[in-house]
Length: 339
Length: 279
Image 1: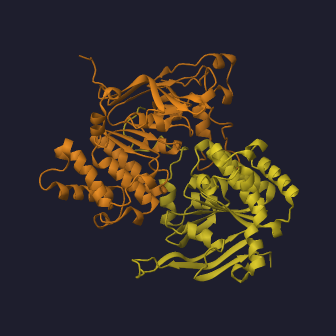
Image 2: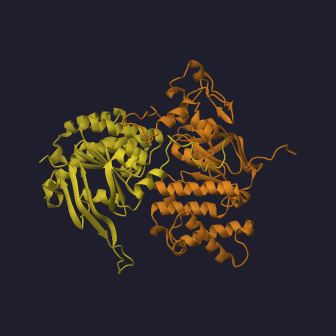
Image 3: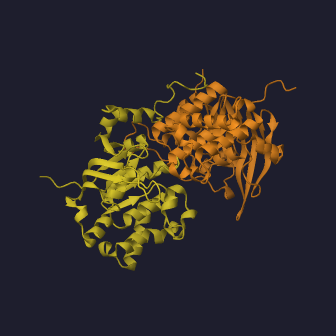
């Protein structure tokens, strides 16, 4: 018997290699995350840092080949997802693990009405969890639930809109349909890849509030992939900062954003204009994420880091705890004052 | 009287009658309703609004890709609607656009060099450069937007998102514009690429004295870049004024709602509603 309840999601030392025309690229190099129920984790970093591939690895949506996992574990409530049959895995997707993909344009079926697409997901989820729809005729209940979810993501006159086609909806509305679809099966874990970046600011705030409500009331655990530190500050309880395939800083949002220890986290925060950033004073992070086919040895951030020393280029610093759940992988972190 | 502004919109309206079915047309939709705006040389005006507010219609009308149903567009005091073919071509060289998604806006089969050269061919009579002159200008432009000469040989897919948008900006500069319409130019970019492109736009404006019409739904970005802000809602101009005034003392509920809803790193951790977290 394990002494502790396993967390909702545990990713341990996940490595992912991608076969490319020019050789294998080490895309993920030892990603580790522990997510409890009710926690919303922001996964941040520049494009090409492995955020999306980390998210897709949980429901096993990365095609293998070209991908290959040389090491690592992904456990949902202690169950090893990497070892499940494809059939068992399929039963988890959409029901226990909800997923919002990045591209709303291609994620809806253009030949099915919005309400039918939502109701189908609810019916499929209800096969595993009959309580979802309650007693009575299932299809009627599924449509009612579909209308409720559309309403909750802020689609006006939701009931009438059930018979609309995807092409009748704007991009922002389609994105909201996908959010409703990911939530309609009442998943335990939601992985949302840039779910709100295409939305208007007020709608974005409404969706984030909805997700926070589901985390607080129903214990939904969530990975929110974003490059917006503002979204992290507003919506997340925890944050993991990714750089070039691994997590370089992690912890509760209040700790990490108030006392960022990794130079990369600091640079990301400094690159976001605030309400009072004077014109021309934004500090852009120079350079780009390294080519993962020829990643530098040692700390992968060293080539862009103002503090890098020869030691940084020699060995990769491990993630070290700083207290209060805050950890950083840096040889020369800013020492945050705790206590 | 002072010089006329670079661009002026006077009471511009635009209606659409969407098709309801193959034959019947639905009720009219008002995309723009009596919008008046001015942009001076060297000035940046931020246009902020929710989706469907009419921001894209505004750019299409300014570029004369669509005609307004009412109102006038004046360029340096001259009515754009009365431009003949020659004046219209010259106008289009002077007013260029940078699109939201550089991936979609750049031809995937053209190299960066071909992409940046194309406007000089289209606007040959305005730009007036021979082949050698165009090559020199492309080399200059690529440096202006902070890329290296070897980037010119690359295709869009061989560039990062930020680099692609720099090519989009170089293309917009190629015909020698006075006014750039920037349609959410950084919303498809990650934060570091966004910061680089924003700083590039500021630098270009300072060096070239361009006028900007900057469309965005990211208020912090608009605040960072723009001198004045115009808020539009359902096709109507709701509020317009200096950026600082709109932010610090919004007069309308619409402005306040947009400002309050915007995530701000400056004051995040005191906000309530966090699900878990430690103190």
